[in-house]
Length: 181
Figure (tube, one colour):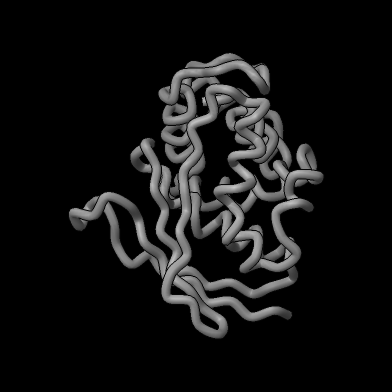
Protein backbone atom coordinates (compact mmCIF):
# COMPACT_ATOMS: atom_id res chain seq x y z
CA UNK A 1 0.00 0.00 0.00
CA UNK A 2 1.30 3.45 -0.80
CA UNK A 3 2.71 5.51 2.05
CA UNK A 4 0.17 8.18 1.20
CA UNK A 5 -2.49 6.14 3.02
CA UNK A 6 -0.43 5.81 6.19
CA UNK A 7 0.56 9.47 5.97
CA UNK A 8 -3.16 10.35 5.90
CA UNK A 9 -3.81 8.15 8.95
CA UNK A 10 -1.10 10.02 10.84
CA UNK A 11 -2.44 13.40 9.74
CA UNK A 12 -5.99 12.44 10.77
CA UNK A 13 -4.89 11.37 14.26
CA UNK A 14 -2.66 14.40 14.82
CA UNK A 15 -5.31 16.84 13.55
CA UNK A 16 -8.06 15.30 15.66
CA UNK A 17 -6.27 14.13 18.78
CA UNK A 18 -2.74 15.57 18.82
CA UNK A 19 0.83 14.34 18.54
CA UNK A 20 0.71 12.48 21.85
CA UNK A 21 -2.15 10.28 20.63
CA UNK A 22 -0.32 9.62 17.36
CA UNK A 23 2.80 8.61 19.27
CA UNK A 24 0.80 6.13 21.38
CA UNK A 25 -0.78 4.61 18.26
CA UNK A 26 2.50 4.58 16.32
CA UNK A 27 4.34 2.90 19.21
CA UNK A 28 1.54 0.34 19.70
CA UNK A 29 1.57 -0.44 15.95
CA UNK A 30 5.39 -0.56 15.98
CA UNK A 31 5.70 1.56 12.82
CA UNK A 32 7.94 4.43 11.76
CA UNK A 33 6.87 8.01 12.29
CA UNK A 34 7.45 9.12 8.69
CA UNK A 35 5.84 7.65 5.58
CA UNK A 36 7.03 8.46 2.06
CA UNK A 37 3.93 9.10 -0.04
CA UNK A 38 5.01 7.27 -3.17
CA UNK A 39 6.80 4.35 -1.47
CA UNK A 40 5.09 1.00 -1.05
CA UNK A 41 4.51 -0.38 2.44
CA UNK A 42 3.21 -3.80 3.43
CA UNK A 43 -0.54 -3.83 4.05
CA UNK A 44 0.27 -5.06 7.56
CA UNK A 45 1.51 -1.54 8.39
CA UNK A 46 -1.95 -0.08 7.72
CA UNK A 47 -3.64 -3.03 9.43
CA UNK A 48 -1.45 -2.52 12.50
CA UNK A 49 -2.26 1.20 12.58
CA UNK A 50 -6.01 0.48 12.49
CA UNK A 51 -5.74 -2.14 15.24
CA UNK A 52 -3.52 0.10 17.38
CA UNK A 53 -5.85 3.09 16.91
CA UNK A 54 -8.77 0.89 17.90
CA UNK A 55 -6.99 -0.28 21.05
CA UNK A 56 -5.65 3.12 22.10
CA UNK A 57 -8.80 5.11 21.29
CA UNK A 58 -11.31 2.52 22.47
CA UNK A 59 -13.20 2.47 19.17
CA UNK A 60 -13.98 -0.46 16.92
CA UNK A 61 -11.77 -1.03 13.86
CA UNK A 62 -14.90 -0.41 11.75
CA UNK A 63 -15.38 2.99 13.37
CA UNK A 64 -11.71 3.84 12.81
CA UNK A 65 -11.98 2.87 9.14
CA UNK A 66 -15.23 4.77 8.66
CA UNK A 67 -13.67 7.87 10.20
CA UNK A 68 -10.63 7.44 8.00
CA UNK A 69 -12.81 7.09 4.90
CA UNK A 70 -14.44 10.43 5.69
CA UNK A 71 -11.07 12.05 6.40
CA UNK A 72 -9.51 10.59 3.25
CA UNK A 73 -11.80 12.59 0.96
CA UNK A 74 -10.51 15.89 2.35
CA UNK A 75 -6.91 14.67 2.47
CA UNK A 76 -6.95 13.41 -1.12
CA UNK A 77 -8.80 16.50 -2.30
CA UNK A 78 -6.17 18.80 -0.75
CA UNK A 79 -3.38 16.86 -2.42
CA UNK A 80 -5.03 15.92 -5.73
CA UNK A 81 -7.85 18.43 -6.19
CA UNK A 82 -7.31 18.56 -9.96
CA UNK A 83 -8.09 14.83 -10.19
CA UNK A 84 -11.20 15.30 -8.04
CA UNK A 85 -12.32 18.22 -10.22
CA UNK A 86 -12.13 16.02 -13.34
CA UNK A 87 -14.13 13.24 -11.72
CA UNK A 88 -17.54 14.82 -11.35
CA UNK A 89 -19.57 17.91 -10.60
CA UNK A 90 -22.17 16.14 -8.43
CA UNK A 91 -22.12 13.45 -5.77
CA UNK A 92 -23.62 10.79 -8.06
CA UNK A 93 -21.47 11.72 -11.05
CA UNK A 94 -18.35 11.48 -8.89
CA UNK A 95 -19.30 8.07 -7.46
CA UNK A 96 -19.97 6.76 -10.97
CA UNK A 97 -16.52 7.99 -12.03
CA UNK A 98 -14.51 6.45 -9.16
CA UNK A 99 -13.06 3.76 -11.45
CA UNK A 100 -12.03 6.37 -14.03
CA UNK A 101 -10.43 8.49 -11.31
CA UNK A 102 -8.44 5.51 -10.06
CA UNK A 103 -7.33 4.76 -13.64
CA UNK A 104 -5.98 8.33 -13.95
CA UNK A 105 -4.20 8.07 -10.59
CA UNK A 106 -2.77 4.71 -11.69
CA UNK A 107 -0.90 6.45 -14.50
CA UNK A 108 1.58 7.87 -11.98
CA UNK A 109 1.23 5.22 -9.30
CA UNK A 110 2.31 2.15 -11.20
CA UNK A 111 1.63 -0.35 -8.42
CA UNK A 112 -1.78 1.03 -7.52
CA UNK A 113 -4.26 -1.71 -6.71
CA UNK A 114 -7.49 0.24 -6.26
CA UNK A 115 -10.90 -1.15 -5.51
CA UNK A 116 -13.60 -0.96 -8.16
CA UNK A 117 -17.15 0.28 -7.88
CA UNK A 118 -20.38 -0.37 -9.75
CA UNK A 119 -23.57 1.65 -9.35
CA UNK A 120 -26.85 -0.25 -9.88
CA UNK A 121 -30.53 0.13 -9.03
CA UNK A 122 -30.37 3.86 -9.55
CA UNK A 123 -33.49 5.79 -8.56
CA UNK A 124 -34.20 9.37 -7.59
CA UNK A 125 -32.19 9.94 -4.45
CA UNK A 126 -30.70 6.45 -4.13
CA UNK A 127 -28.60 3.72 -5.70
CA UNK A 128 -26.80 0.51 -4.81
CA UNK A 129 -23.03 0.62 -4.73
CA UNK A 130 -21.01 -2.56 -5.26
CA UNK A 131 -17.46 -2.42 -3.88
CA UNK A 132 -14.86 -4.92 -5.11
CA UNK A 133 -11.41 -5.10 -3.53
CA UNK A 134 -8.53 -7.53 -3.29
CA UNK A 135 -8.00 -6.26 0.26
CA UNK A 136 -10.17 -7.80 2.92
CA UNK A 137 -11.62 -5.90 5.81
CA UNK A 138 -11.44 -2.35 4.47
CA UNK A 139 -15.09 -2.07 3.42
CA UNK A 140 -16.06 0.00 6.52
CA UNK A 141 -14.19 2.88 4.87
CA UNK A 142 -16.89 3.11 2.18
CA UNK A 143 -19.67 4.72 4.26
CA UNK A 144 -17.13 7.27 5.50
CA UNK A 145 -15.90 7.95 1.97
CA UNK A 146 -19.44 8.43 0.71
CA UNK A 147 -20.28 10.80 3.56
CA UNK A 148 -17.05 12.71 2.90
CA UNK A 149 -18.02 13.02 -0.76
CA UNK A 150 -21.44 14.18 0.37
CA UNK A 151 -19.75 16.98 2.31
CA UNK A 152 -17.70 17.88 -0.77
CA UNK A 153 -20.83 18.10 -2.91
CA UNK A 154 -23.09 19.65 -0.24
CA UNK A 155 -25.22 16.51 -0.15
CA UNK A 156 -26.67 14.59 2.80
CA UNK A 157 -25.77 10.90 2.49
CA UNK A 158 -27.04 7.83 4.34
CA UNK A 159 -25.39 4.47 3.75
CA UNK A 160 -26.62 1.01 4.65
CA UNK A 161 -24.36 -2.02 4.29
CA UNK A 162 -26.52 -4.70 2.67
CA UNK A 163 -24.02 -7.55 2.86
CA UNK A 164 -20.91 -8.92 1.32
CA UNK A 165 -18.11 -11.42 1.71
CA UNK A 166 -19.36 -12.54 5.13
CA UNK A 167 -22.61 -13.53 3.40
CA UNK A 168 -20.84 -15.41 0.59
CA UNK A 169 -20.66 -12.62 -2.00
CA UNK A 170 -17.49 -11.68 -3.87
CA UNK A 171 -17.95 -8.00 -2.99
CA UNK A 172 -19.67 -5.64 -0.54
CA UNK A 173 -22.98 -4.00 -1.37
CA UNK A 174 -24.41 -0.77 -0.01
CA UNK A 175 -27.69 1.08 -0.36
CA UNK A 176 -26.96 4.79 -0.65
CA UNK A 177 -29.58 7.51 -0.16
CA UNK A 178 -28.64 11.10 -0.91
CA UNK A 179 -30.28 14.51 -0.88
CA UNK A 180 -28.57 17.68 -2.11
CA UNK A 181 -28.71 20.38 0.57
